[in-house]
Image (cartoon, rainbow, N blue to C red):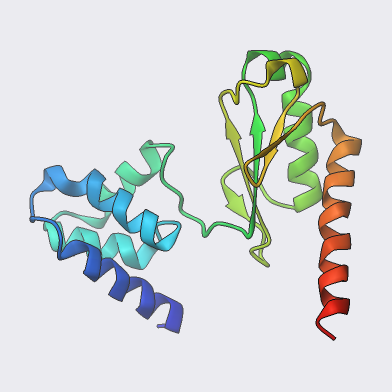
Length: 167
C-alpha cells in the first residue's frame, strides 16, 4: 500500500468517527470524505463500506450514480465546459472535444501529472458568452478550439515563469 493510500484511509477513518453506522449516512459520509480528500479513492470507499457494514459495490454504485462524486483526484487547475442550451448550440461539444484532445483525458478525469481535471456543467449563466469554459472558477467566453490552445499556452508560460523565478 502506498503512503497516499494509507493517508486516505486514515483521513476517512477520522471522518467516520463523526457518523453513526446507519446506511442512511452513506451520502453525507461520502460528501465529507470527498470534501477532505478532494475525491473518493478506492481505499476510502472500502473503509466506508466496512464501517457501514455494506458491500463495496453498494458504495461504488452510489458514487458512480451521483454526478457530485469524483473517482479521480482533482487537478491543480479545473476545467469545466458548459454544455447548457446556449453553449450546446454554439459548439460546446466541439469545445469539449478540443479540451479532451489537448489534455489527453476524458470527462471526469485528471491528467496524469494532476495539473488539470476536466468536467462538464449544465449551465454557468453566461449564455451571452457561449460557448463558455470555466477555468479555475473564472468563466472564459467564446471558447473555441483555438482558444483552448491559448488558455493552455498561458498556463505553460506561467509555469515557465515560475520555474525561472525559482532557479
